[in-house]
Amino acid sequence: MEKTAKDFSDKFDERLKAAKKEKVKIVIKEQYKEAFEVLEDCENSGLIPGLIGPPGVGKTLLLRAYAERSNRDFEWLTGDEGVRPAHLIGSFNPSLVLSKGFSLESFDPGPLLKSMIFGGVFGLNEANRLAEYVQNSLLEPFEEWSAVVPRLGRIKASDDFFPVLTLNPEEMAGAHRLSEALRDRIRVWIRLGYPRKSTEIEIVKMNCPEYTLSDKTLESIYSLVSATRMSTDIEIPASIRAGISVARLSAEMTKREGKKNVTHGILSKAATYVLTGALRFRPGIDPEPAVNSLVRRALGSGGSSSPSDSGSS
Image 1 (tube, rainbow, N blue to C red):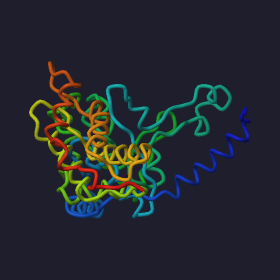
Image 2: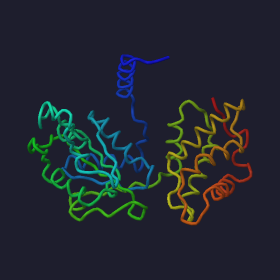
Image 3: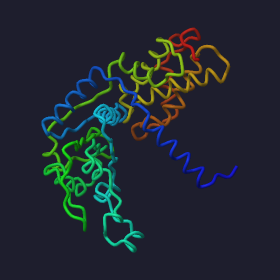
Image 4: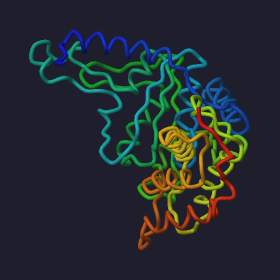
């Protein structure tokens, strides 16, 4: 059935309201609790922090939760080679400039400027993937708490503006060093690693609320993702998201096949589907047989995930 413009507008408003009601799912304990507290201390003392850790450990999620708990908006941008200063501050809409000139009405603000104006948490993800000249465009906002908006003037940031950088480890592909000037503005460094076993399993369970997974199956999934982090053949191992994906896919496969419990075969199949794209192997290693071999070694022949080990609702 063809949808009208009003249908789209109504649904769009509905989805906007749904997004505002959604709460962040996060486990605030151990390293996450400590990082949360350091973020509070940084903001209260006027210091800009950097969160360092591998992909998928919850850096952005932690910032989103921090903004939510302080009842502020969260704006963010992910750095890469294509990001320009205008993506941070904003730019003029050419079609509106023709009718309104270079005025505020024809200006589309970027996420950094929005946070500075309204007072919110600004997360610059993967900051060390930005080109150096883009990094250096952040010096005034991060040092003077101000920014020059082309043709409109210089603005002073709200007192509630709180910028945080997140970075992947420098040894990872695609990561650059921060410019010395920008690094000098980042006064506190918070490292997040992969969480302890009990915490990671709790995170997986929290993200699978509609399924029932036994402790043994969850431990098997943890053993699998943990094994990827120990392998010297893998450049980017399985993240927490990969473990969640294995848990959800294996539970759904169990339900679709009409089985009561997750079997070893289902868990192995789900893990293979997820890890084939989730892992990055070192050059020269064929991913498909490498994943199959890793799954066999980590899950064994079936003893750790037998049919009686877990269930799905």
